[in-house]
Amino acid sequence: MASNPPFKQEPHKLLVIPGPIEVADDVLYANAHPSMSHTSPDFIKVFGDCIRMIRTVLYSPNSQPFLIAGSGTLGWDQVASNLVQPGENVLVLNSGYFGDSFTDCLQTYGAHVDQVQAKLGEAVQPSELEAALQGKSYKLVTITHVDTSTGVLSDAKALCETVKRVSPNTLVALDGVCSVASEEIHQEEWGIDVVLTATQKGLGTPPGLSIVNASQAAMKAFHERSTPPGSYYASWKRWLPIMQAYEAGRASYFATPPVNLVYAFHASLSQITKGTPSLQERFQQHREASKRIKDTAEALGLEQVAVDSKFAANGMTALYFPVGLSASDIVPKMAEKDVTIAAGLHKDIKERYFRIGHMGISVVDKARGDIDKVLDALTEVVKKALATQKS
Ligand SMILES: *Cc1c(COP(=O)(O)O)cnc(C)c1O
Image (tube, rainbow, N blue to C red; front, top):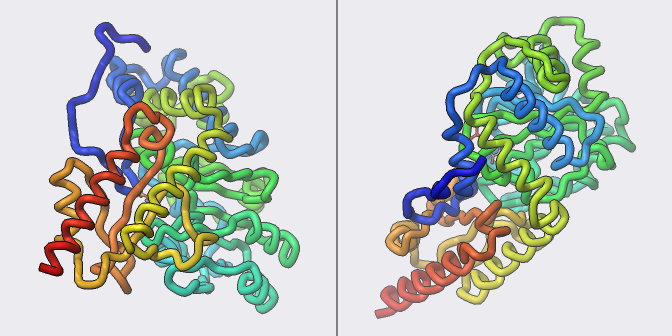
């Protein structure tokens, strides 16, 4: 969509929290599309394209995407209400805050949940998963790909391999809210049954859409349920015909989709799947930007929450404050330099660390200079805080 003169958003503080992230002008402008009927042929095609582009981002040509108004959290409800029946066993691999919440959601729908709890700053290891799978039979295993409270990355590929080898009938759901489009995910090749995410993190769109991408095996498990899904709005019985209709170019209605947001999402997905950089280069650029941030932090004496580089996410970084400093020495000082970062979230260390997001256009649109701006601000703020503390 062209505008003349091109739309430009207002000057603002750089938003580098782990979601929502900075959104490109053309994506915001797409959101300003004239109001459209959700059953108009023009909109149906845009929605269908979004479904198809999700498959591209996740390397899953045979999956069934669900795009439903809601936040990332709605993905947990979809998994819990459509893939698990009350009383069935679920194993949650917990690497932080979001593992606790996914557990809570699953229990709300009557699942029997066991957890493998990773140590703070670590992810669950395949050997620990294997031991848990040998002790009991599970309908579903959940993995938080990047736990946004710790910046810890789980090895989704190795964990899936373990599940498929030890317990081939167990489904795997990956919470990819903080990893889709910033971490590489080969859903089909790795054997992930569900990837759930949202628009406002790596996918570079305002918040408001829950995206769930289900494998054929997940859909089969859904169809073989003996009880109806435990949710009205989140039920795939209601949404599957809608997704199929939109993809086939037919009008269909269950509940009104966020029409304008879908236009915005289409603009961002088009950039990610068809623009420059390529998807592979996008992942590489996230690894490079992440390394720059982590190297600079280390040089400043800041320690990562992730205890080893193999556990470190590429789309965000969680850093302990230097000894003697606290959030008030860093977070508002960064804001004074027009850089908005996030405070802590994990209950055990909430007051002791902060988080920086580095995803999407802040990483791949190098002309913006966002990463330089973050690093310059961080360097100045930390050095000044340490100098003030000494004097
Ligand atoms: C942000 C996030 C969620 C929740 O997403 P909302 O859009 O805030 O509902 C879930 N899981 C992870 C890993 C997240 O980072």
